[in-house]
Image 1 (cartoon, rainbow, N blue to C red):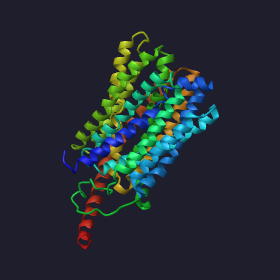
Image 2: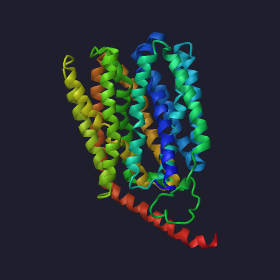
Image 3: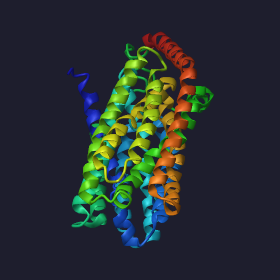
Amino acid sequence: MTSRQRPRWFVVAVFFAFMLLHQTDKLLIGPLTSKIMETFSINEAQMGAVVSGALLVNSFLYPVWGYLYDRYARNKLLAIASLIWGSTTWLSAIAPNYGTFLATRATTGIDDSSYPGLFSLVSDYFGPEMRGRVYGLLQLAQPIGYMLGMLLGLMLSESLGWRGIYYITGSVGVMLSAIIWFFVKDRPRGASEPELSSLDTIGIHRFDRKTALGLFRKRSLILLFIQGFFGVFPWNVITYWFFRYLETERGYAGSEVFTTMAVAVLVLSAGYFVGGALGDWLFKRTPKGRVWISTVGVVLGALFLILAIRVPVANRGLFMLLLSIDALFIPFASANVISTVYDVALPEVRSTAIAVQYFIEGAGAAVAPLIAGLIAVRYSLQDAILWICVSTWLLCAVFFLGVAQLLPKDIALLRSQLRERARQEKIQQPAR
């Protein structure tokens, strides 16, 4: 590894640790759901409101974070986000009653909308030809964080209680904020683009209102945004309710839940990287490549979830097998969606672009757990999971096919804009 490559992989390592431990804290709510419900004597609908509250705050703050990241130093803002994570987690841990917990848990959504700057900064360390793999690697943190959360929930919830676990994860957020502040460096926006990477000096480009509004004139991006609203429904339903579904409707003991979910999560982790790598590979052959891989992922995800859910409760081996196969395909779209957004957005508005994507996704994410809770109260968690996941995945497949038709033109426009920027930079460089 060359000295030039070393800093960027250090940044990836720090960001992986940040995402892993942040996701552990965020997703602990799933394994700890039953304990929290017992503490406050609440039902599924009330617990769904707790999850939805944090997701609503998360969603509404995405545009704010996106603007700030495109305007100011991204490394410093990420450090502040980590500090907020630690502080708000402590607040939710000391909540004495349901109303206070509902409010304090909502504040944990503030830092959950901080990822656009992280992905934008990474895009300035790695070129478009390998972003899918890097994003896939970083997003391994989400399922591994969920598994770590399950492990903490099962091993420590009896001895420490759910509050004690949150004291620990909150403290980790504070420590990571110092590491990011002092050791992660920002990069010039667009530094890794092929058209600009050969320049001795890259001009400073920051958020521009006209450029940001131009994002909404890219038809492929608009369809991708709309897809995002529905695409997060399955993620949030599975994340927040599958643990309880295994406990209450399939009769799994704590150790059986962990074993089943651990296997599925390990396969899911591989799916992030496999999906990103396949997207990079096919993108080199056609600009539609990333979106095609995403389409395959959501269709097969819907198919294998139907097969898994319909397996009789007694046949746990077949259920685990089909669930694991399903887990491989579920994350195929994740890294490819981020990479596709950056394939059509100028570097100085990339945080804003992904923030808009996540803002729209956040709206879907906020209502999904509550809808699932309401369906579960009236019917069952199995019905809630199956109906929501399958219908929205198939709808996403339709949107992805539409994006694929519009994408080549928007990518070509971005490349031409960057070539013109490089030409202008070369003209101006001798005067510097």
